[in-house]
Length: 338
Image 1 (cartoon, one colour):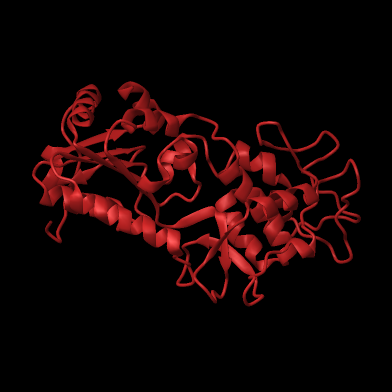
Image 2 (cartoon, helix red, strand yellow):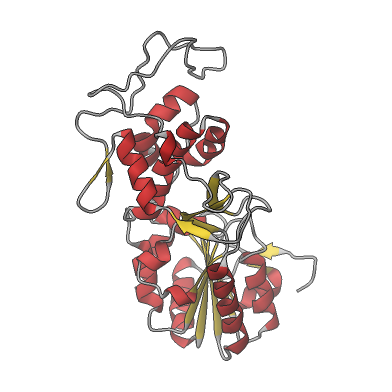
């Protein structure tokens, strides 16, 4: 593909493109799914709004941020007991709780009988929970369910569910029968302080000098975890961190390399009509999925590129005749295909 890329959209109406995609799925010898954050957003895993208010209203009130993503950076500057209180909530609701909408299950029903492989930058483990074969998944950017040494002194990751649950119980949360994180009836996510909250010019609430959070029974849930629950590396004793790719310390463990090798083998050994199905991929890390799908479609005259995205459904002009671009909610479009 030329280094000069002109972005366009595939031709045809929405209904025509749905018909084309149904035919492409039926005829495909192999399907490569590339999934970004938009797919999980369609399934209800949103980082702001009602979900944020339900589990992080106390952090919002005290520190002034308004979504989980921003909060994840903000709390890294706080005491580790507070940092892990925040992150334990974020990990659990985005990794261990059920999805609000069955979008991943719908996708699985469409491809379960096909020769498929999934490449994803998502870290929420939704594919495996929906029934996808774990040996056909490559999570390139990590997993909310894994910790690693922050140093890192060795290339290994560790499951975190048990400790995360302990952290949440220590804050006063409870778990429903289906695993849903619940605020108990005698709990609250409203901040109470012994003293008055200060309101500076920037509008961000701050703890006054000498003020203390009131975490007594019937008051707000705790915004910290016991120090003994703070995870530390079993090898060197340094603090653990999330296994999320953010800098050069990201650990690519044995499982990561095995998945990478399986993906590479899939691409090398499949022939015939390839369908590159891109779902909810933006331009934060386009080189992992989007650009590679464009290039592989350009090189293979029998390949079809599909982009389903809300507001960003486009393709290079060079492959537009072999592309299908659908602008809209992924879950609703999957319903039309089912």
